Length: 92
Length: 468
Image: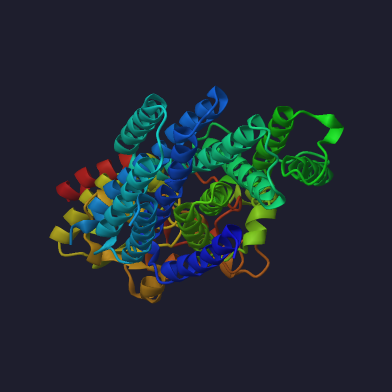
């Protein structure tokens, strides 16, 4: 089985999992959940690191570094702002 | 066990932690820990990637992380809770943009090496570029609309549909060229083909979002969030990385499902939001007929009196409260009423505030106890037996027109505030809300209009209740 096909299996199963995970979220948590899921989409940072780490040309390196910076904003900002929101929810 | 197997296992652990983290975000009690787990999962994935790859130059990586981390941290710490929709929009743009850049870098790398990508790789590169770029430019426009930098009204132009169709055809052609399925149109070089394709995709993202009105932006943000997940997943296919495919798919599916939940809360279909250009017509016509009707207006003193001598008060906070950031003042008013023995509750419409669940965040910021908050379904039957309903900056979500089958907002779930004995509406003017239609509630006999900015109004009422 080719790597692409394995990837497709993984993609479909993860999609089903994602759908199930959101099933019973109360409206109260919609905003933090959206912002938390948003932070996870910053996983693109892994791709950006792979590309940059093995960059053979200046052009690829520049694209990679910009991608790292953008993805890091998404990851760091996303998790921190979600935490800030949820911290307020905690009190009783 | 060799290093690459260890790294794959670390990716697996990271994927599992993302799933568990998202699962914990289903309940307010565990949500914060869930978010922490997801952040830990991200850290593991990043560490595994850096261990696995022979890093040629650390300088670029460290600069990228330092710059991005600094900007992200400052933004997350300083953003006002009321500006949350914009913030999520901006972060979305960066996530999508990063995925597109990964695909672009892989494309440039392959062509620099003189390697023609096989069809499957070519298609994933084109898809990843397209979704990432559309997410980027669409999110930037959504941010602009939410922050008032771009008009919140639906923007349309003559010939929009044929133009979009043409653009779409051009994207398909250029995309096929990028994927290596057809010869580059016009014999373009690889780089100019990449730029052309990206430019067209940028334009598509803009054109998809500008015809959508400001009221629907939260739904659009959620949809774009789903896209940013799909973009990351596509980037995972490009570089053959499972943790990207899994996490991206999780976010893509979660985002899409959340989008549909929101549409349900507003009684709209997704197609209607995306293609509807809601609130465009009707605003002026409805206004003209409403202008001459008499309204009863009150000041802070009268409003305070009515509430201070009531037995039960239900507050309906809305968009106007969010914009004026009046949640702290509102809390003070309600605390004073509670001290006087008034039964106080808050009725939260699912789309109150600026995005679903946003009002809960704002009231939590003001320390309003959780047990005073009630969802639409829980409280809607109680308005008939309530002395006073205080509406602060809400409009469409309390518009009885929704019960009129001929109205543009027909069928939208509303709070039945008009059934209460007295209604006080704090609002700056009689102007219509997002839906662009007049609200008959304002002209009812038992309605008092308190024309003022929400924050100032609540501060004035606090003083008056103290003196009463």
